[in-house]
Image 1: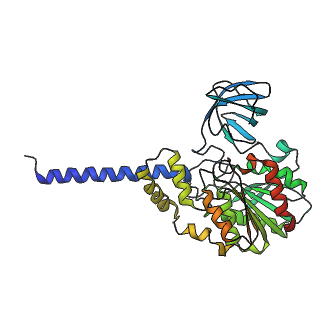
Image 2 (image 1 turned 45 degrees about the vertical axis):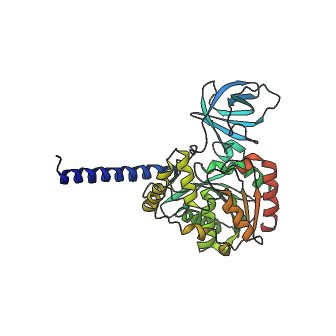
Image 3 (image 1 turned 120 degrees about the horizontal axis):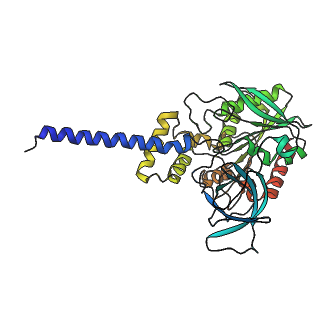
Length: 376
């Protein structure tokens, strides 16, 4: 007969092993948000396959993503193109979708290539991609110098743009022509963890909760260089950074407005969404949240804090939609409902996270123009 003591030890060892495995699984699941690499697709963005190209057309795997309205970048390993709307007159099979192929920026697109849709229509820098004069500047930040692009303008109200999860400062180039036409100087910032910027000490993305201090450094740079006022434009966790800066920056009196695209207003909801997209079993999602808390110091009490309408003091324009699988639209809707005096919400259907402009560029830019007119 097996000794009771030996059986108890075995059971304890198995339990300890299972606990360690669960902790490791939770930590791995939290990586979906905390280690999201800049310029790479989030796990919510499906990989598509190129099935063929023709004059001005490209055939892609049929998916909800490939059926989205609007204009997007199409990125692959070593290639980038721009695709327009679905070509309704083309022959579509049950498994494919034909979209307009606007241009191939670099590389080639061949049948069988794996690609994904991205908000970025432009790659490179503002001079090469848009023909806009710009300066490469270095902003002194908390962890070191932060690279940024500065596109000059005649006004003394600057737009400071910060990207979010899975993106780079190239995303700001979508709006630079419209802002340049309004003579607004634009500063597009690369912050901690971005290519060419200092790495955070723990190597993790804190979903805007520490990164906002780099945006604060950009505000200081703008004011030192002639800006009387700044408008903060943030996508995703860049919007979180903008909200934090508007509340905590020592120079917040210079902030005249906020433009938030797909704002992450609940880090916990976003982390769960990205972990689910990595096929994390539902029972492990709480472990992913706890792992993120332990690794970054993020806590759930930050959710009501960042969405507290009493903390907003400047006009705010939010672009967001119910099809965002990363940052729940409901938080934006609730904030706009509670502060109609300061917050305008433009709802964009059928647009993925941080791609509200792509679904309808003309309407987006017109809404932005109306918002900025009294601020500049």
